[in-house]
Length: 631
Image (cartoon, rainbow, N blue to C red; front, side, top):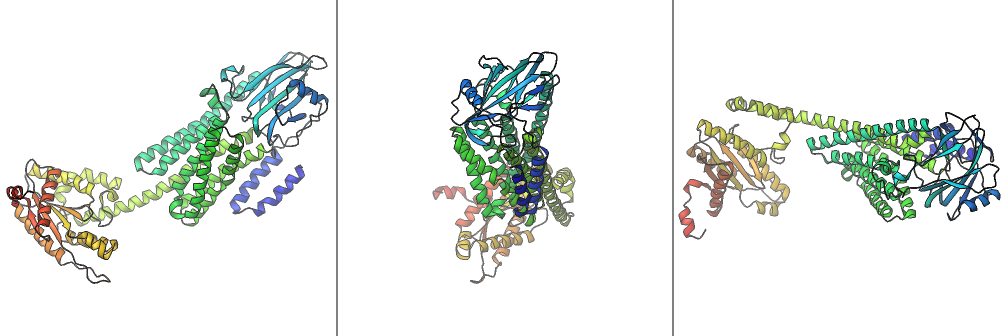
């Protein structure tokens, strides 16, 4: 059987694509098969144990019996043993996915001259229940129960507090003891019918080191989550929040799968389904982050549908685990693991499309895939169960997260370069108006330097017209109003609206409407000074703040109205022409930005009522007449 597996390994890499997948899988499988395939002692041999046992010796693989219905008690198991039904395990250490329960028989012989107190530790975390029975070798008395464990029992019921099942045996000097051990998997599951033999002090030492190492990994996951959360708050990028959730899901899933959730959090009424639900949470979080980071919805739509299907399977896995549907849960998680390599292929595709960070992501995801493949091969019994491949998946998961963090760093660097280019463009714009803005720059140097450093050009600019957006306009207007009050300077606000803009969109299309807005903004910008504040408030509505007297503001408004009237844009249907209506308001002592905008808007409404293509001053409106007319 081993030779057949070696032949399978030597043939399979050539059929895998791309080459990166082939090389990674081949190295992982070869290491697992040839370095960690255990020898199986002959049936009936006693295991010689002594002082200072450090977990290197394992029991249970020599004589194994499968109870498919999981109905046998210790007497029935002993009868099967006496009948010769116990046989060596025909795999590298796992029974594979089988229903029912398994029994192992072994003999321990104390080769020392002192009484030994030894701990026997189950090697894996997936077992649902375990029962151990002891009999003095050569004595006719029946087996007596010495330990019984179940995941559903309170953790405090364990005599030896450990995230895996551990029980104690006592061997007098030179004595031998026979043992039968029952391994239960709740209808269907993977069983590793083997126990590591420990000196209690050495197990405690090893467990302390193991727990500390896992805590280090979890601490790393937590720090990565905090870093991503801070980055998300600072940048507003949703991918950072998704990465935060993904990092936290790693702690939840591995903490639950490795038994620490039962030991420290859910100490009562724990159930195996919690492991599957935690795994579903981690799978879903990883898929959501990958879709955002790789932008598959925009650049790989067909593969994105497959990722959505994988998300649906993760939800199905969670529901199956919630309702404790064992078979469906195993099928669902198997499908999820089989489809995991798809994300590496998506990353390679995005790399081919020009995304450097996608290549790093693909490599990081492959690290996780290799870890999960090793775990799957261990579960089905193709490779031996060792501490290395036991912890390879969580360690690979940790390295995966670190590598993805590097990919995020590459993405941030690209965004920084984009930001620096925006800063340069913003600086050039400032240079063009330096002479006219000199006095204002002296008072606002600190704000402008901060604005340059933070590259808020995109946040302040309307993307279509290139002028101030509403938020930026109001912010600048508040500062200008405050300055005008301090220096007792006049200030006027023009509210300008393109007439019949909806007709332009309906007749010529939205593209023509955009061109009209751009031409309008360009015309107004060309007719004002560099220190005037011109912005788009929304749709076809614009505002212009001037350091001008009433007369100067009205003259400028009329000139701009005439400039707009002369505009024409060539269209297939003929030249597109349009006009604009303007409302003018002037700053008074008690005015704020809001009240000044309201006055100008009132005047604009009056201009449209007067037939459009008009300039109306708020101070010229006869409100008493309007009240008499019912307005």
